[in-house]
Structures are given as structure tokens and as C-alpha cells.
Amino acid sequence: MKIAFSPCPNDTFVFHALVHGLVAGAPGLDVTFADVDVTNTAALDGHFDIVKVSYAALPWLLDQYELLPCGGALGRGCGPLVVARPGAVVKRVAVPGDRTTAYLLFRLWAKENYEIEVVPFHEIMPGVAAGKWDAGLVIHEARFTYQNYGLVSLADLGEWWEQDTGLPIPLGAILAKPEIAAQATEWIRESVRMAWADPDASRDYVQQHAQEMDSDVQRQHIALYVNEFTDSLGEAGYEAARTLLARAAQAGITPAVRL
Image (cartoon, rainbow, N blue to C red):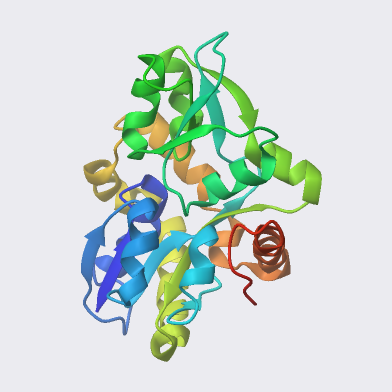
């Protein structure tokens, strides 16, 4: 069975038990590591059986996949940031993918038109610091590390979203082929609960794949992005996703979709 998720600490923490054959009844997995800006489009051909994508990409994928109620990344206080050098005049903005939730939020938030360039996530902060772009839209562990590049936060889009809607921010979704969705939900939820029951079990796996190698940052990342919504979206999680995609469709950014 083919699965794709990011090498970020929250995903490797969540999927450790499942990938390593510790979940009873789950099949062996062929794992592809790729950030969501890659899987958002790589999933279009239905190559993967289970795949982590951005909520913003769902309108192009729900004809082939079903949204699972667990395993993803939603929450509060965990949204993308717009970062820049102090005092920079912002005209050019680097973003980590044109179908990411981060960029969708940016488009819903922005009052001006900016020159946008899509670049790999790991290049954004060094590039902004070097003056290649005026600002960058950052996600993942950048929330904890952007100051290390001498950058400042111009906007917290998660904070903006929460104040405007009162809802958690829907970032990363787990999709599965419809014929295995029910089983995949059980496998992934069990993997999440095993990770919480023994957090040290996945430590080496997380460390091996993390782009940010500082162990304290890894722990902060996991604590922020692996939360009650990872175990179960619940009504608040589904309402957050429906609200995001309804606003995007209303703004003409994405096709309309039903969840």
C-alpha cells in the first residue's frame, strides 16, 4: 500500500507506529516522503492509497479520495506567518506552494496584490534574509525559528483566521482511497494513540527525517500540531474545513466542494 506524508516531526510522530508494523492488522506500507506542496499535485493521478495534503487542495482531490477524520494537522495558535526583514517594503513574496492552505489564507487575507514566487519551503527564510524576496510565507517549524534569520513576523494568518471565524485553522488533511477509508481511519487513529502512549518510541524516526534538527524545536512542533484534532476532527474540525473552502470558492480561488 502506498502512502505519502511529509518528513516534518508531526507526521513522522503520527505515522511511526503504522509505518513500522506496530498497528495490528495494518498492511505493509511503501512510504514516500514529500512536503505538502508536492503531494498536493502528486496526488492528482491517484498514485497514493493514503496521502497527506493541504486542505486547500481538497477541491481537486475529493473525486478520487475521501477525507479521513484523523491524522491531520488542525489547531489553534499554529497558523502560517508572513515574515520579512525589519523595515522591508513588501512587493515580492515567496510562498511554499500555490495549493497550500498557507497560500490560500494569504490570498484571503491580503489587501494588496503582490508579486508571488513559489519556492521550496526550506529556501524561503534564507532567501528573505538575503534579500532575494521582500517577505516569505512560512509554515512548519519556521514559527519557532524565523528569528534565527533576523526576520520579524508581519502577520500571523492563523491568529487572523481564528479571530475572524472563531474556528481552528485547517492545515493538513489525510486522504485515503474510498475503498480503504474506514480501515485507514482505524489504523491511523491507533498509530496516533500509540505515539502519545510512548512518545520516545518515535524519537529516532522523527530525528532522522526532520529538516529542523534541534530536538527542542521538534518537541515544540509535535506538541503544537499533534492535538485533539489529530485524533478526531470533530464538528469544529469539519466546520473549519467547510468554512475555509466555502470562502475560497466564494472568492473564486478554488472550485466549490462539499464536505
